[in-house]
Length: 324
Image (cartoon, rainbow, N blue to C red; front, side, top):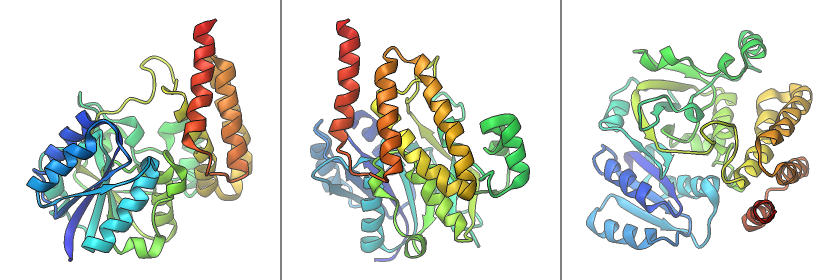
């Protein structure tokens, strides 16, 4: 089968979000909707099976265990390419969905010479979703590097005004929410790094595309909604805490890929920054143990630590605080 566009969605125990996502997808112009179920236990699989019987485009790929978002996208990309041979693959999590007409807006765009594309992602209240803001790699652009030294994150991410632009904007890296990639790219850059479980796989993958000399463009007229919550509203605190482990372990790998030899100067600064965040946590000792485990695994390039063991460490520390 040869198709123009196939959507890949990864889900795990978020049936309410998934219902919204699938409903939005069924209104979009795409040839196949592939949902990777990471071993959900909340009725997701049963609901998906019922929907697949009603909607021919809906394709369920059940996993025996939770592979994380990264593992789910790795499997989903492979399956989509093998079964549908699409010209384009678009991917996102179950708590995100394309806004009405988003896929048609993408397909009607001038995609000549474009190898991957990033959508404009917003929170449900209409604000720009910061975690999905595309960026340029400051280590490849010296002017951006200087701006980043002075302005931090704002120095290399696209500006708010770019979301109102009427033209495509070059970027080097982006997230897997509203990420479109040509099917042929899978032959050149491979599959997402499933061993990362969650976090960093999207930036790493898009950086690999850019490093291969391929072009990624931000298309502000292609809009997605992302109903996500990772940080506390008032402080930069990961909830649940186990998300910090993957952010820091995988973060070092992403920084290495982005910075090259400059990584050895950047890494100590990032580690210090992460360490100082302990002051925001009610259980700073647990946070520092999680950080230490993440850094140790990153240095050893260990990506096979069981997810359950990471969760247990965090939960045990939080229970000890409650008992005190």
